[in-house]
Length: 299
Image 1 (cartoon, one colour):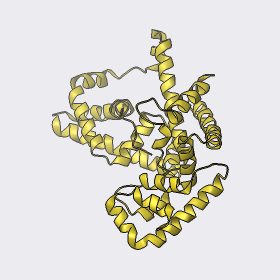
Image 2 (cartoon, one colour):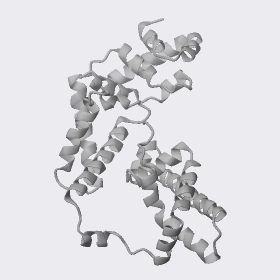
Image 3 (cartoon, one colour):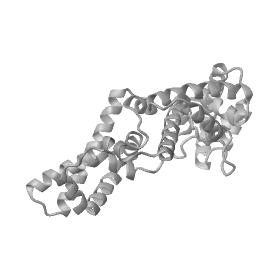
Image 4 (cartoon, helix red, strand yellow):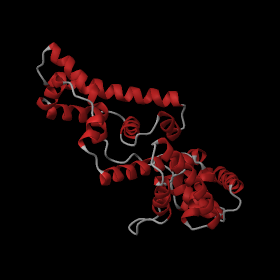
């Protein structure tokens, strides 16, 4: 067994390592091809092939075919990320260029005020390349299952929004500001919301729990992280029309399931049922933002 393959196998779960044994020639050839591809993309970076092989193995799904998993990795981006974690100067310079570009784009997309992008860049440099003492650099969370630019794009948008929220809390708003931002609520919907608040919350949470992991992540990215359809499409590597279709289907499932559960729990007139449906639809994004407060699944 050659040295690179040995480093790869050593990082696999026992059952995966056992499955590699009869396919060792295939695995070794694929690893050589991936290492060559990664070196060609960033020849200025110094990272041994064995280190890359170990990183590849450590980031593969535990329940899949490792050779199939290897073929899906963005190996050049993973090599760059691994080299950043070791402090390679050329890798850090390349990473900083990518990060600056994505933060500038994220700040523009959320209409951030002047100066915010610079703050976000510094915060992300510290989070991704230094860590906080309790855990290592955040760049270690990058698994190579999507492009590094997509990883940085999502991270940049999220951090821009965090900084914006913090600044808004610090500045505060007066009553006139709030009046302009919050539309008047239909009195009937206000009454229903006050009367059935507990039932609505329980039914909404149950409808959300019935979604699969991808549907919950889609709603979280849209409602909590405020990503656009184009950004969500980039996150999943699909066309924006596909991302829009997935998102709308998930929203519709939550709304319809919530309405169904409410109708089963409550005794309402036909007019009240119609009002409850309006309430569900009007409160969908607000409630999603509250219930989807956990961070999205790993990239």
